[in-house]
Image: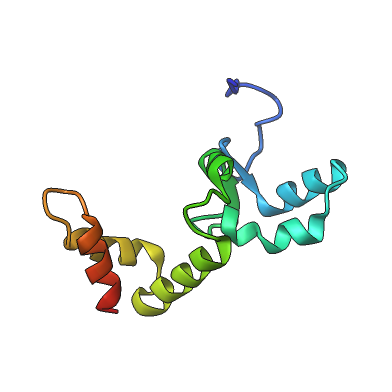
Length: 117
């Protein structure tokens, strides 16, 4: 949809209009009658950059969440290992991309990167 930047609903926002603060996300889940506690424990999976906000892009990623490529537990283990070794995901991806030839990481380079950890 289209968001009107002049909408009264957007005035006074403390975050970008394409982001939803954690507390507003929680309030909307409760309003919809959804199992808030279960969903909020998974908030970190949705909030990819850990800024306490859910962006439109974060929500779009949910469309493919749980696809057969990797189980959520495996992805969480991967995320934890990357953060433990590099401090944050951005630094981990920078290190991975530094191994890339021609701007792309091959499957072999990807495997070698993780074996080197």
